[in-house]
Image (tube, rainbow, N blue to C red; front, top):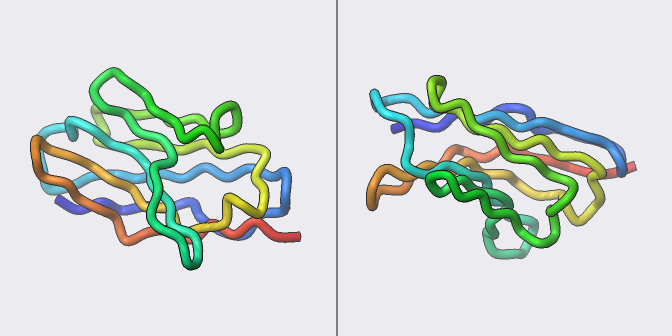
Length: 113
């Protein structure tokens, strides 16, 4: 299974970005898909995730980020608004099939004026 992310970049504080991730290599849509991020010198943390029909958000992004999913395309998206410097990180797509977990290569999001 491969995950390909896109949509990262440089954005001003208060701006918006949308990340996309598509899975390939399986005929089935992942059991779970979501986004994690890792800032400089920090551990990787959950941003938002679908686990079946359950959606989870990190407290720090609630009300600003929206995760969505296209099961037919085996894709997951992250609409990010009201971005601030604390959101600067490498964002990783994650997919899970049963006990197996897969990661994308990561896409950099930088929030700076």
